[in-house]
Length: 172
Ligand SMILES: CC(C)(COP(=O)(O)OP(=O)(O)OC[C@H]1O[C@@H](n2cnc3c(N)ncnc32)[C@H](O)[C@@H]1OP(=O)(O)O)[C@@H](O)C(=O)NCCC(=O)NCCS
Image (cartoon, rainbow, N blue to C red; front, side, top):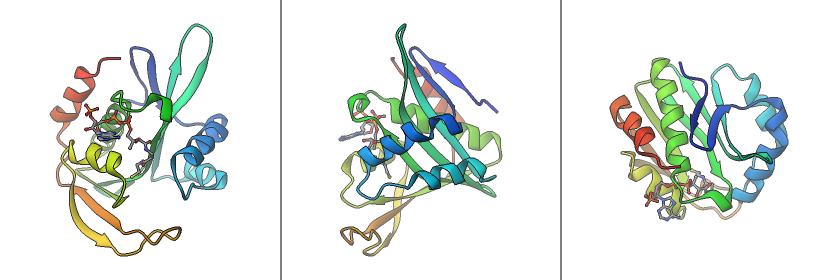
């Protein structure tokens, strides 16, 4: 299982307790119902959770610009959350983070993947649809802030060749 991956100037690695405040901040900037800091701390202790950050580094500094939590439940990879810093979106980073996480899950025995997404979340829907996820159901009025529906999406088979190709084609 590959725990870390460097692609040009981005580095994907497991989240640690030292990342929690940056990850919580990123989550607050990204979601109308952000997770409390405690929830991220709990995920570090959850044996089913695989928790990742994307770190960007140059000669001056290192910063966490992305995070993702995935739960491996028997042979299913549940995408619990994924977020990219607004300044680094539309550069293909979420797609490579997804690839890294799903390849890790595949190596651990996951064969399929699933997630929930707000109906209005065009960016996330486009990301998932472009990688083979499709809508399988709706949880009506699921989100407590605006009673928006959650769409349930599945990826029937994690195809390692497809996800490796995404990593190979990524241009930092
Ligand atoms: C959804 C999110 C993670 C995407 O991150 P990202 O790094 O910008 O996504 P990528 O650059 O990897 O995009 C990959 C593909 O997804 C689609 N996509 C991503 N953002 C899009 C947007 N704003 N509009 C349309 N398509 C989009 C495109 O097909 C894109 O490929 P392209 O740029 O070659 O056209 C990011 O917008 C985010 O953090 N949003 C807030 C948190 C969130 O909603 N998370 C998902 C919860 S389910």
